[in-house]
Image (cartoon, rainbow, N blue to C red; front, side):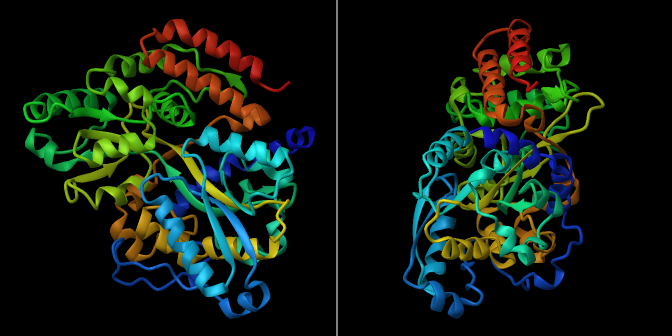
Length: 456
């Protein structure tokens, strides 16, 4: 565990570059992968098929018949179905048998699962999904992919590769990116006299209340706004957006704990005042799936979520009745979106590292990134893929005015190996506020605990 503490700092050196590169990848700026990207064709999430595995015959000759276990995505939207489809195609083409195990939906629980597995030197998983903020923490337990995937790594955004490189070793490959966005019902905005989505949090509150009041005449389950309010990592992401978009800082700024400030308290108290009014009382138990289900079922006017939910909305009762935009702000502050995303890594305890590497090579290829973006609305980490017409057609959040939103990062670069502890302090404190306590009474204690968590 001492080794893990020493290495985390190196894994998060690229935090600033990561933000820039994620913005560039999503906006589709020119990258180094132009010639490697697949040709765009008229496809949709309903008819797209998993791509063939490149060089499958050679892979089959070398690794066919071997078995590996992939700790893949949880049942959030179509993410697990995406993995099932891709793993099936990979096994058919290569003869490598892949056991797919979904990881916990909750990011905090996913971290704990990996920590337990690696601490036990377990070979239970050969390929694992790792949250973008945890690659440094798990670096000592991950296979050096730079020896075999150096060429493929050059296709991805440089900042993400920098994030995934620890002390000169590429310990993970980008799987997909993420950033927070606002979903809204276009039909309901028009119905209630609004020509555009809200630009400020105050506007969102007023619009949500008016729409909710009108819709309640026929739907008692309708609410104005839903988001990830449970006490877990997702609430840290949401709260970061609330504070950063209102001049309340980013929890820790320049190495100094800043969460206890008047603007942060005001924004958190505003969110508290909405609970049970324009948001469900149960929003304090919502994670991504609960928020997405409420919105896609037609029971909410606005939702904060990640891009994956866009594909879900296109297959249900709100198809053609919603759109996305940047999250609101206050005053002259800029709108923001929390940086998210997942990587794929090979466990250093794997008994079949060669076969595991081939699965990672396939899953992080341009062809698969194109499939993921169209089938599951996953944010490409390969700039050339983000530029494809077929990808942009089904993902309006790739428009520069949305994809170019200011990205904000969680304070992993300041908390180091104590990030998980620090995030827990943050989301537990915010949860107390959402459940009724005044932010002015909660934030001083949160700040004190965060200060104690800061290394050195």
